[in-house]
Image (cartoon, rainbow, N blue to C red; front, side, top):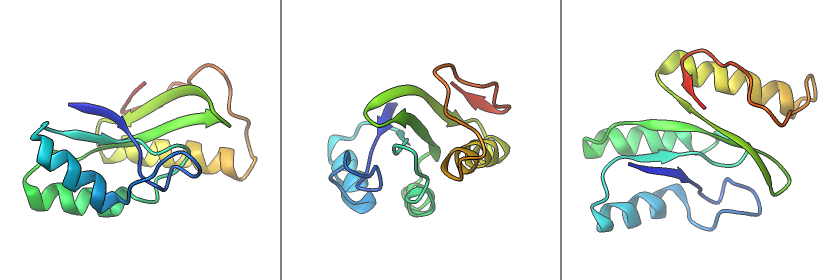
Length: 111
């Protein structure tokens, strides 16, 4: 499985569109791909739909960073895990909580 892949929804860090990322990955015949854009889940719906249409396992998460400083990567085990990642990310983006150096315990996720 290819882990920690970014699209241009990883603001200032990714260069490929979600479509281009999957097309390049498909050319490599590299197996499942985990989309983990930086502080964003904007490409995830496209990623899920297109992985399913290819018969690939859907793997999504977030690369949590403060600027370029990576803190941790969270990958959803299931829909509940993806919901937990989104709730945590939303709280950070809305400044309800601060992103810490250590990952929190997010149920139904791999950290």
